[in-house]
Figure (tube, rainbow, N blue to C red):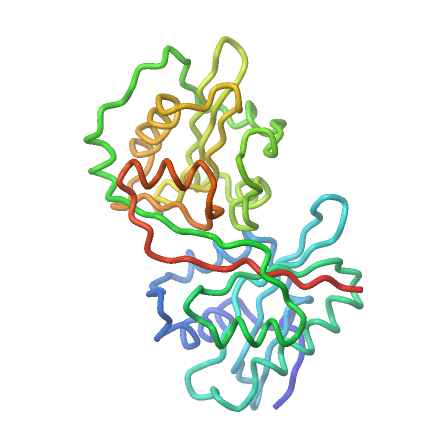
Length: 285
């Protein structure tokens, strides 16, 4: 077995290994090659700072790593970790993680984030063994888009817009009741802006609420409301407008912070909570 980075792997090779690794995952992974490329690279995937295990040049295990600057420091994110079906239970995951931590530290990374399914205690304990800490619990929600559309849309008197330039300079800390997870950050949206629909609500020339949804996938990337305007009417109008802007059968909110007002609102609106995760972080010293 050889461990090396992924910069010489083709996208097709990465995709093949990804499908093999996740063919029996708890969450069904049914992803086209184009979807795989979009989702992976939108999270700032860096092949040179990702690692894989190889047998006779065949990729048998991997950690796809995203890297971006957050709050002035270089941060890394585990986009996906997997071992192909025929190569499990021989310790590849541990070897990859050990190698990756050394690689990221040498590159000047300050912290390394990942998510692990709440029910996957084996994986969580493995990460804790290597020094990862749980920083928060994240909840995921879904609801049939048609059911959202059938709910009456409140009239708030706010102007509806779709101009992306109106939100690029907004302060996400102010508009969100919690810090968005990596896959929901502005940076992810800007990397894949052509696949998303934006809705803004404005009072005069001032944006007071906005939301971003994937036009075909139905995943809500961001849902932000200025603190002075938070209330059921604005949230309900945003939800209704998003349902009109996506072709997906289901609307999904992925990785919402437990205990946040948004989680409470989604439950009130009949959204189903099905999958929960722990966000974990490793601090390099």
